[in-house]
Length: 257
Length: 346
Image (cartoon, rainbow over all chains, first blue to last red; front, side, top):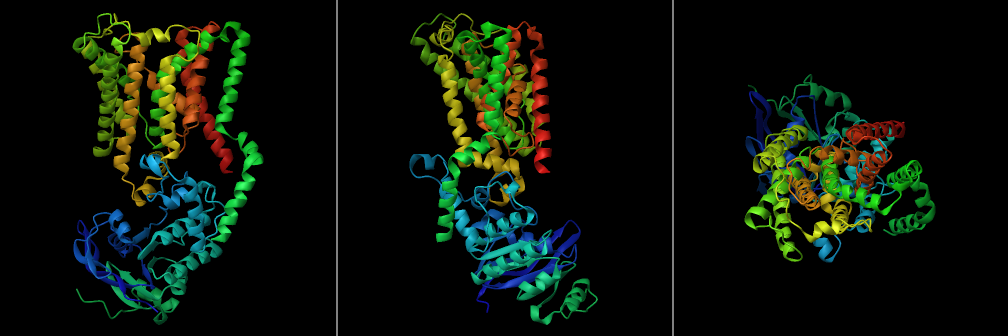
């Protein structure tokens, strides 16, 4: 099922002032694997996402991409190394078109002198954006349309499609099914399955536990900055997952203070 | 792959006439041209002399100084900011250029013909450099000290006004020269003076960069959603620096334009022009919230502004009313936008 370890976090910790947001978190992601990252509010999910995406540097611990240790100076560095992150609700620039959003930061230029001046190959990008989105399972009416004219579900689909299309190794999705209706959420889950088929390592952060149970291979549960459970999805039911998140089910991994 | 090719072909086939006609009604530029034609008709009826080459020349000459800073302002506004310093930059850059030309190059003497071109070129470079520098200061204040653009550029506006008065002792510098370029603006047998043509070319080139290049795209992206722009790997601070530098440099260019027009660098020559620029931008349909704007809109907005001002003066309204009219136009344009958005959303 899953390939080699593609992304690894070893013993990462992060504090903000006196608050310990992340306490010795370790995590292994394989190629072609979907990990669900769950936990209550304040459990350290967003800190973990920021560390993995390069937005924050951990105070301690190491990050390995394909076995090589990496230190991310910025999200840009992680992005260029093949780690794509879709932040919650950040997604897209509403005034730009679909293809402008898909290609934002990775534009294609026309040939010759004008290209050197930064003039854009609009038609090529419109065409390629459509093709790339379709390839990951998203049908957007026109890549020439402004994102503000799309529905919430379509916007989210474009944002995820953009991330999946560009991701080379790892993709981190922070609450991608938030605010979506059942059918649209289903489409997003399909995109995640496509990304997995592509051989990407996927980290899926969500509060919607049925989605997590449906799409992930493994679930990592965070509580108070610690990873308290890391087990195959098949070992969880809805009830045991909730119990693990809230702490009513005692986990083996908790080490005494 | 084949599917998307077919789709692309299909949308191309549907595009031509029907689509173009249907968008014309909602096309901002078409509406603005309509307003312009309407204004011209109304003023021509009230004052038949309005419809003349001389009037057109006057309007376009006024337009030339403001459209440059309005175009710079368009970038700034699209990026989500505002630049209040541009009017003061016109005064300061004109004064510094005039001082350089007269003190260093002896241009306060009457220099005629082609001899003046070199001196004027130096003046233009100095003027643009002064504007660029002020633009960089604006960007520095905004990026490093996180001062909101409104306050940062208000501060540099005050500083520029002060410096231009200090440098010039409050008097225009270099009134005695006789540049060919100035006289080129004198005869009003042609609506387009030499300087207006230069300005138009600059505006067209800058406009292409706004709408066709990555520079423009990033400007829109930052104004539309700074967070997303950052997430896409855009260096927002560096881009903002370029935007304010561009706005400043264009204001410097406007400074030498005004110098050429007046034959002197006057510290007060740009007073209040920032208001004209903002008016042109919002009449042109740019949103002060960022992410929206077009060069063509700004160009037409500036033209409407000066058509109204000239027209009112010609039908006998006292020139003192000018600022009130500009204020009313700004308010009306923003109100129209807000109403449009409200209706559009529902």
